[in-house]
Image (cartoon, rainbow, N blue to C red; front, side):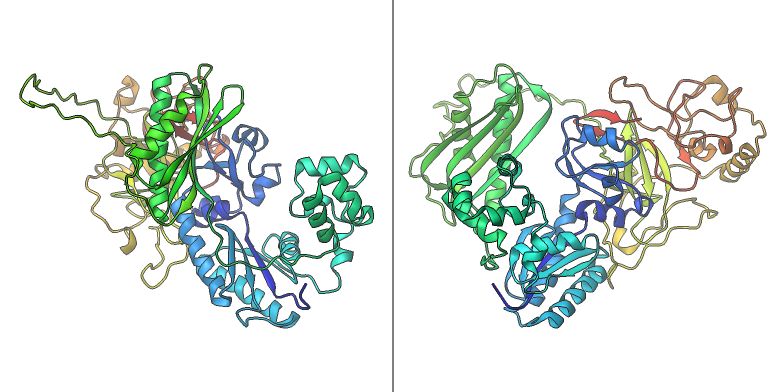
Length: 590
């Protein structure tokens, strides 16, 4: 143990959710949940506003939706999280050469090794400076723990959350740990915690009083010795800058169980290719191929095969994974598949065993040649996912708020803009395309983007800033009728009846730009089960209340029964209904 709190632990606050809130002004201060949006999705991170409803990481997404039905549910944007994580880790490396990353948003730092701290005062200064630098560079907040050991530094950062700093003074560790539950110690999970509770041990103080011999009897020699030392606040683990990877793997959970054996085989081949790409990206190869199969009844089977030498050949990995699949019964259905490579090395042993069989070539290519007929499949409908970055040729940068029934709803705003307006388009609109995320904190090359004022010629549209400038092609249409649309909306708010146009009365589809100008309603997505669209009622329909007297986000149906892409003119706020597409199917929640 050290005599000064020179080990720092940084933990970013609700990292994924905080990134989404920072990049989407309309979500700041709102409940945000990031994770898989499918029926079997899992929560990756929940904002502190969502945690107030009981939502937490690793919770099934279906349960989270029941606890916080009004939260925003978004898919992860991994590339953006990696980029911001690299910025944070670079700040840590400026403090010390000994930085031990635990994940994208968490790391230990040995301040003494870098000369950044040597006593309590200097450690506190280093921690405060780090928090200020992180906020300046990323716009996000992180919690810092300072102590004489890694275990205590991590406990301190947990106590400092959110956006705080906690320093544990040497000599006070035992008094701090004593009343805490045993689950606070590293290595004590649910099973070990229940085992200790049945033995009458629930706090760290009771753990220390039980004695080392009793803990060895209860938990085994290695675990018992280690746990007793931690109960006495002894932790001699050093900060390790580089940790060797033990395996590389990928896996997918499917919304619907796969029963077709051919489909299972194709999924395994696809996972094998993804695993090899990740392996090559790390400059590694491996000897042992591992297949993971979780069946319909949640039973998980693992099969492995060790090759005669390390490889990063996709054909070799595919064939090994296929052989392993042959030994697994998938009759009842498969809900999860995974392929991994272990026994890693930084070199490959080229083709000593020739496991990848070449495709046989006919001796006489002209004999029996048949002219190939290329079938051109119908182009698949573009998929838009909630939280995805997009850019429109006319309205600028935005993000997908929801999609379903051939429509996609986009909120046009940037990290430096006020909350933006919402517009709905057809999913195949050529003017709408996927975009790269914008930086949370603009640098010299990324000036702040400013939206046009609400009463400008393009209400709610953001001009194309230099970082957004790309050739998009296409246009949304004309700009006719915008002034008339505003006058009609104001009249509707006053409760004055407004007549339908002749085309609307006939139920005919309208031009998208003109329909948006009339501000008739907005598609809110499709319910998960029924497949019926929820469209805002036309306030001009008989018996309908004016917009000012109704919930602007409530569901309804249009007079014609048809969903049309529209523009919302209400002030930006968090909708009470969020939707998205998962696996090609439209999903939403009330």
